[in-house]
Length: 575
Image 1 (cartoon, rainbow, N blue to C red):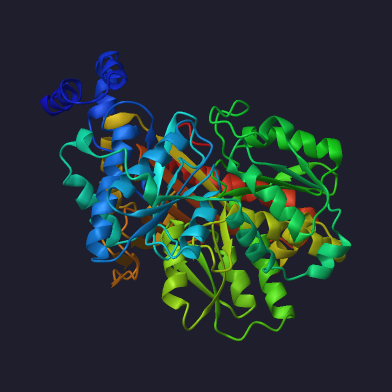
Image 2: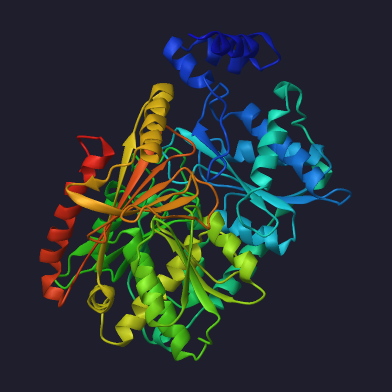
């Protein structure tokens, strides 16, 4: 064990940490100590996120208090002389309420008024409440869709979006200045903590219902069969009520997953991207003959969707497919209502399907592109709210937003609008499967896959750094015998035409991401995680679909094409 790790361990054992924490440290073997103390948790694309337990590389009450104290210090610097306020929420994870109360206490100890949700609520409702109360900032305690061992801390700014530069760096610097984390006041000032009641739910749901584009279709198909699961998360508190108020009357819950439970007893990963998490919903859908399956992750910012195929079986859509259907429907609706004036736009991330752009172009709507992370979509809304109209934003990782009263991905809104889309399709005698085929035939068959290569601990981080260094300094010239024509290196802020050698600056923030554009129109993106030893590879290919009957064949061809490109991951098990 290196000396700096030993020193950190000694500090936790010989200072004013509580006895359960010290006992937990004493019980660790050397490998566990290294993992718990070799680094400090840092703000990534979504704030803090990590495994719960004792140590500087873990989520615990001391790390939560330190993050909050640093956040509070920065807020006083950013808003000098103001009476500050923040909103605080949490999901269903183990310790989430406890960490939320510590967060509220530390803010209040720093003379900051706190609006604390009475109980668990969706992350997007925190964004809405922050804006509603005109707070300076917000925090939600969640680890999103990670396994049960994890928890986290998402920081929001006054516009309702997650913190961006320079504020993220300012918060990090303020946190780094805190030496004695056991001296932070976690008792706080209860007089400065106000409970947010169910009244905010009513206001929030009313705003969601104002987004309707096809009220007649909803009314005529109000008995659309919807199966919904919150996967043991906070969605149960709002989604069913929102769907009912939206106009839908036939909602079936997945009984074994409806109750909030931080142990997530029915799934290894409470993530609608994982088929295992969706199996109970698929079973329920088959039993009731559902028209649509909806599933939200524990903090209800992501939604997974299943639809019925012509043979009456069900297929789970990926995030790009769901987002494409949503964008297609919204643009149809806006066009039908005469709301497309030339100033409207949608937003996608750099790893989200190019199908979004094709659909937008057909409706003569601008498609803006941002780095991965919904906070960048929120930034586009803020920067353009005075002269352009935001229609929708989406990312491949199951996150979508319509309207501007929330500034983060919102699965409550998405559940309502996707159900409305199904009603709109039914009004035409179609299913959502028919709509998806219609999109592919009109705009091209785009297929994307994600491969996550996971490493272990400190050594894993070093391996990933080495891989990215190679991509930056000596990138490949071809992949699977196909030439790379163009490279976008977001870390170096440089776009390179590999044929002519010409370079151009990138109009995006610095990010540890590299994209390869191949001769056959394939796009491959490498992006390491900001919070754990993992690197993601995004593969995007395109084909032609002439008729829906050709779907299985073209799908196989495009899947085989992606498989051939996976050698770039360096993972022999990638499939």
